[in-house]
Image (cartoon, rainbow, N blue to C red; front, side):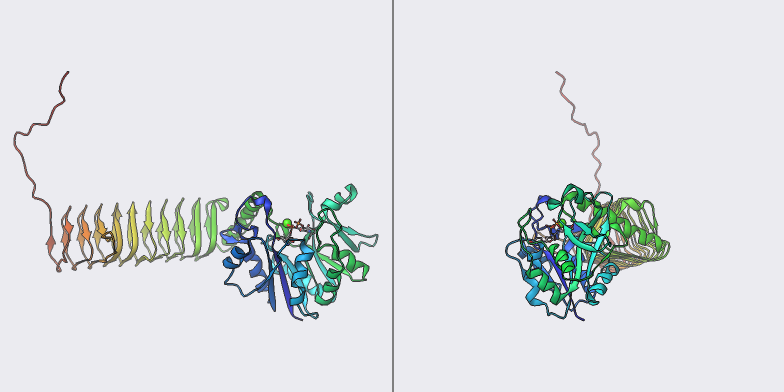
Amino acid sequence: MALHVVILAAGKGTRMRSDRPKVLHEIAGKPMLHYVIETARALDAAQIHVVYGHGGDQVRAASAHYPVNWVEQAQQKGTGHAVQQVAPHIPDDATVLVLYGDVPLTQVQTLQSLIDAAAAGHLGLLTAILDDAGSYGRILRDADNSVVAIVEYRDATAEQRAIREINTGMLAAPAGRLKQWLSAIDADNAQGEYYLTDIIGLAAADGAEVVTSHPQHAWEGDGVNSRQDQARLERIYQGLLAEALLADGVTIADPARIDIRGSLACGQDVFIDVNTVFLGEVTLGDGVTVGPNTIIDGCRVAAGTHIRENCVLERSVIGENCTIGPFSRVRPESDLAARVHLGNFVELKKARVAEGTKINHLSYVGDAIVGRDVNIGAGTITCNYDGANKHLTEIGDDVFVGSDTQLVAPVKVGRGVTIGAGTTVTRDIPDDLLCISRVPQQHIEGWQRPRKKRR
Ligand code: UD1
Ligand code: CA
């Protein structure tokens, strides 16, 4: 039976106090709606329908890479009204699963039991038992413990509010019956909205069995209505990611002080220190260590490399057994071979650096191709920008660049060249020479330093 997933994402999210539509607010650097769409895709849905309304253009633009059917709900008249908009897009013999764009962490296995109940002709409902049931809808059961209705908090009596079993909002039903129930709901309630939850009472009256299940973890049903909810869910999610890495054999100095906003794949015996942030896709090879206060964004780091404290590495490839930092910045499109050393206050940008080369102090190497076993002295700068265009600096193998050298690009330094400290290189240097452009040193005899006038 074909599965159609309906994701409700039309609401405004007033309590976020934001210009951004609520479902685009992020957990671990990814919009909440995208988690829900990806969960729906993992369920092998025949079609995923996303109900949009508030900030619809933004929501659609941010999610354009997903193959979903966008259904507009021009006015937000309630969750039941939202599902009604999708009804014409769903064949009667399908199974429908309703998810929420602001409930990002529901697991695939949890939803499978709802789908199974619906496929058997029942209404599957995901409920949870909470110590503090807050303003969730309450589940009403009869003397036989069968679900007979859901009452929204705002419409509930004091007695009903004392019920601890709540509606997570997620449900599944056979499409044909769901459509019948939906056509019978009204807006006769405290909020004047068409409640999806009213179909439960209608289904029960219709003789349908309401099959409830609970998520394995309480947070699976947690929705985000405020920044507080978002921050809490972010911590829960980061905790899960850290747990998974620990289980995989990674040492994490403090699982509460690592943030992963993307994917982090680690080899064996990786060590990650505190206050580290990983963005995009990051791979760390065997034995890699990452020092404290370091940010790694979209990099591949090969085995045995030590990234020390306070480094920022972006969209680059780092070879085996390198030493990076402290205080190194590697900007996008850099590519370091094995055994490269980068030290304090060294900035690389779009630099290809071959094996064994050392750039240890206070240098800028941008738009450059640097050979093997080169030693770049302190304060060396590639002058890659003429105010309009960027130019390439090429440095051959075994070059020794003295401290405080400027390489004015475009320029080529031949292999084996030695450059004296303080040189400004403006022309290509042939192999194996000494290049020096220093102003000759002068000694002025009897020089008198100016003195302050006495008053
Ligand atoms: C809903 C449930 C409540 C449940 C809670 C769980 C109803 C009537 N109530 O309440 O029983 O305990 O979720 O979190 O369903 N939306 C639309 N169009 C609308 C209204 C809402 O797309 O016209 C979307 C929202 O963007 C949101 C979701 O539906 O993603 C839930 O809406 P919300 O107003 O937050 O419902 P709750 O009051 O939380
Ligand atoms: Ca909600």
